[in-house]
Image (cartoon, rainbow, N blue to C red):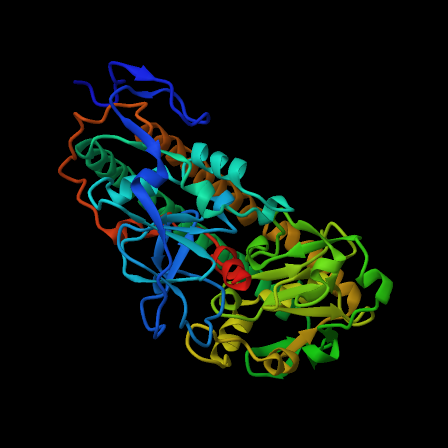
Length: 472
């Protein structure tokens, strides 16, 4: 038998989004195999689990998450190995999976336990439930007033048909996909390492420009700042609070507050570590006026919580779709003083590696929810050239870092393409488009969970857990 060939006969699937499936595979509604359970933690001391659209259900201690820890997890839902865990709010983004751990999850999650533990290989189900065909089914069955707040309720999930190959075939599919995942993860890790090197190069260029200027021959003087030995003699030094307003108050009227006017909404995951916005949501003003951080176009935002602060999450909001916006409470907002500093120059200063290292050392709070103190940011001393020279430096940096920017974008495109390839590979395997019964691993195909770590997202994951806990 040729590995990867088709099965001998196929039939139409019960779920409309699926292709033809092998004739001998079973297909029954989820309630045939699973039931909803609602067991709660009495101590809150069990392993805290996180749910990701990329990596499924994993211990939060192993993930680069951005949300803070709650004061207590008493009353959280318990789950067992083999349970399906679904973030009700983020099912439309495939934020679900099967757990391999005893642990606790948000009370807002749905937990579903198998009637028979041997009916599915949990890892096969983990792959199956996150393919695009199933995500389309979740979207179609979810309800809500806005596409980003659709909820998949238990009765809807349990009515969805699940594909069930014979158990030996499930095991074979899992072995094959884990092997391919290991190869893909190694590729992604190598590409991320290269991005790291290019980012270091870019940071060195930026730090040199904003602390030394463009002209290396200009007269220098002692800066009086610990982290900058000397600066151009005509530059001044100051604290950031002298050139920027922090968390500016809202100037809009009360009538605007209660209106249906559209404003931008910016959760942490929608801004990159290079200050770029990704598909900013639109919300009604009345929905976000309370409980979120306020900002305006051309403000500078920076994450204050670990690890987002250290990773450089934040940047200049010069491309904000609306004049005002709201975002996570884990942002610090700075508004540049017009006659002292350009907003883009302020953003460069806050992106410096030295600023991030010193800020991380100053963080306070319990482990897992540390934040950089506002006082540290306000009193951080910087060197400041005249406005015209700031403009020249910013213009020069666009050219000086263009090579790194182009290379980084190209590498990210390669990572996106390999992820698309992986999605197709998984979908074909778990729906029986390829017959893997004759596949055998090679001598170099031994893998461990550590080999698969790079399959996680390139940015710190936050919203899928954070929004569920808020909803609870």
